[in-house]
Amino acid sequence: MKYDVIVIGGGHAGIEASLVSARMGHKTLLITILAEQIGAASCNPAIGGLAKGHLVKEIDALGGQMALATDATGIQFRTLNISKGPAVRGSRAQIDMDRYRIYMRNLVLNTDNLSVAQEIVEEIVTQEGKITGVITQLKNHYHAQKVIVTTGTFLKGLIHIGEYKQEAGRVGEFPSVHLSASLKSMGLRMGRLKTGTCARIDAKSIDFSKMELQPGDENPLPFSFRTPRESFSPHQLPCYIAYTNQNTHTIIESNFHRAPLFTGQIEGIGPRYCPSIEDKINRFRDKERHHLFIEPQTREATEYYINGFSTSLPPDTQLSMIHSVEGMENAKIVRYGYAIEYDYVDPTELRHTLETKKISGLYCAGQINGTTGYEEAGAQGLMAGINASLALRDEEPLILRRDEAYIGVLIDDLVTKGTKEPYRMFTSRAEYRLLLREDNADLRLTPYGYKIGLIDEKTHDRVVKKQRELCEGLEYLENTFLTPSHENNAFLESIGEEKITDKVSLQKIVARADFTTQKLEKLAPLIGSFKEDSKEQILVEAKYKNYIEKQKNQIDYMKEMMNIKIPPLMDFSSISGLSNEVVEKLQRFNPPTLFAASEISGITPAALDILHIYIKIFNKK
Image (cartoon, rainbow, N blue to C red; front, side, top):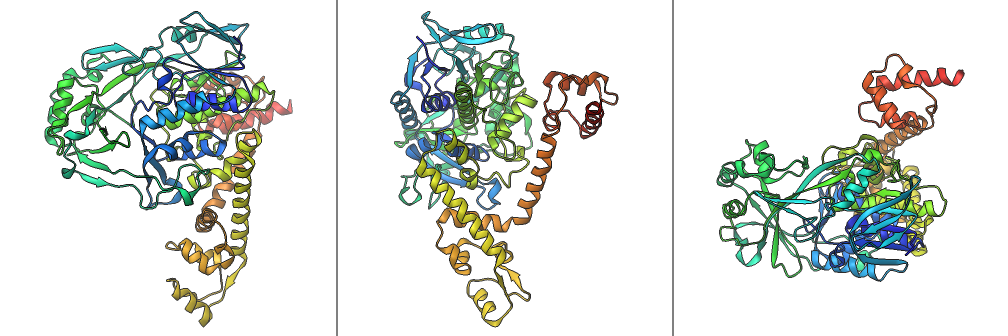
């Protein structure tokens, strides 16, 4: 049985990878352990959040599916950090996790060029360092030129609930045991990580009257740029906020001796930025309480997820600590929380295309690369699928720079710096986050999606129009001036703005802190005729003009560095002034440019200066 591309795993990375490969015209096979669980939300029933929402918008702009699925199955939509600047705002949606899974599964099963097999891959087959296919537990041999591994937490997955241990990739599902050995046999460096989830509670047993109501946005915006705003009107359900207390903390502390995280039962390293409740209590003993977000899992709201209460403590302890929370005194646990350990591949084994350096045609995406989160997984799956498909076409790969996308930051961080703990995306990881906003992801990335055939003509034309309106609007604001006449000051007062005493451009007025799109329409009638998203873009760009220009200058300097190539034959060990650590890392990663060297963790500015000098000397020889 021959295919162009085989994708192993039907999670968020596997879905995006297989859909992209099939849509780009390649015969694709998705092999998954349980077909019913394609698209399952293993942990929290939500998509997006701070920085994660950026990733979902970028997946959408390139032609991926996650945002569209979220709009179709969402049950609450909120914009986080709405009171802060546009660069750090993040869209988040509660999803109906059952409907999301069914939506994705049906889409996969109905996509042309895409087949599904419910089997377990046990061996990856190579010949002379190149991929030739895979062998499953049923001894079926599937041939392909490209294989994308998106196994999530299934590689030698081991679940922990107190002293109880179970081999599983997700609760109730078989793990993938032999595939891990196959990857190791290829010489790939691998490690062990840990993540976890919380208990799910029967809705009938919760007293919501004792909790704080957390509704969705009054006028919610869709996640996808391809979902029409005017027709987007989801039925929204409320979430609730509860709190731990000193009694909760005492119960947890008194059971530390039974926590797999502290007894040595768990070997893998957990996510520092999304710790279990026992880790949180241990690390932040000074905190009197911690937020808990009580979130519905489906439209029917029969079960609730306790966000912030991830744990692997024994069942009796889980019940006691949940009962200590106000509003959950009589709570009934439907599913207990657990921790899960799994194998992952050191992401420094990968190129920026997500292809392994050692095996041609083998790609890795998602949690197997040491990340955590649906969004990080989906972004990697999309890029692995794109680059595997482009390689089959003998075309140049799509490698997004750090100044182009959060996806570029994510992949660059992984392949140049690696990770020893589950990697999570934050806005602080992006040096140019003022340019990498959620609202302009379509402007940044849709041209790429259109070029490779994942974005249709209509969508592309809409983005071209938005870009044109943005340029026209900004040019108009910068070249149109107001003088401090009686008439002009009266007008400014009428829209709630302070008078002017000197001649100023409209851009300077729009840049004022409280200036809105409604005021913009009155100040600049030309812009008033533009589409709403264009007006929002113009407002943001006008407000942050100086900062945006500064970041663009920094990018120009970065591009100059990218053009300074490091000679392939340069002997780093012969360069005096470089520490042994710097030499070892340069030899290990063999960066092609000075910029690539700067991205390696531990390479200091002083080392870069020395390297730059020696490059000049080397090139004169």
